[in-house]
Image (cartoon, rainbow, N blue to C red):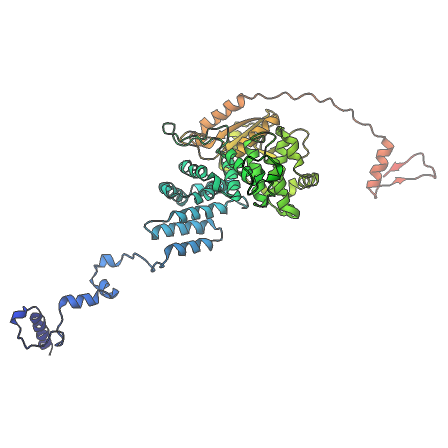
Length: 526
């Protein structure tokens, strides 16, 4: 029977390939006789995966493009995965790698959000130290994420600017390749930012050491510098004061009116306590207490609104109380023209409360704990050189301060010298600039009578061990040891022998003087 079937099938295919002229006119159609073409057979089988696997070579069968079918809406799927990461750096980096393997054209919004989530893990309210942040900088996936952001920076939008600036400040990574594009968007939409966005960008730029009035604030190599962005932080602060602090013209009033009744003074309800305190501390970091003038400085209003918004929850306000007390302390040290107005902005009860809670309730949680790589490397070099009295993370202040507010990286008291460490990325190849923290600390240390030397990581990492020792030796030789004044010795108080012996006997109940009479003249100690 098998040969007959084969012959029948062969005849059927041969008849299907015959031209129509050779067929009888009264013959039934081929489909009614069960005769189909080879193309019809294969087209019906191509929809089945088993058919494709059977025809594919063995080498191609081993290639698995997707272990599982990708979701229909890939973007929303990975956005939900970011929400479920719960601020775990390892999970966030894993999601980013998985997303880049899945899509051909990644969305810039997802890259910004992924960077923001990762940086917020190391944000101001985290327990990660500076050393942990430096470790995340060395992970290849972190570098790939920044490379993707830099490569697609033409897709930047204005809404991404506050997030990116905050993320760089939180993770302490100053990406100079992205800065010009971000700062251009900040300036172009200056009048459109809300108060939280203005305060976030002003504080982030101040911490990064960008946009101050002293400069430099250009990015890129020396041969191809961007334009200068000096004074950008000051413009952000003045914009916030113009729209939310200084008197506003009433609706319907003449623009040229000078009547006080035609103006309304804002009440500070547009922002939270953190927004106002962050603006105040940004002014302190940049040292622009009296900008634009001492009479029109918005800093007292920032402090006033921060206290009003905090209300009775000031003790639980976190960074707000840190910013407020540091503002008062720095104002007391640097003595600006508006010092009295700044101090009067905070009630004396608030000032006293912040002063009493500073050491154990505020600075203990706000100050970065632990050390960082550059500081430990310099500490090992100081040990090799056997430099005496090099105190790591030592507090410093004025001689009459009841409690210190600032810590030096290394403090050498016998030389009146403090070593500070700038581990931020430079503004371009070979163009370092200290961060806002270091700049503020340097100004305050000079008022304390302490010289400050800043060591930049971009230069320090290029040296070997002998060159590092030679550099430190040269630095220390510029600051000779100070001769301490001789303190006159106080005369030792000669205590009465009988009083001392009686006090010693009272402390030791087993030892009692033997009484030989009612009014003893001689006592014997056993």
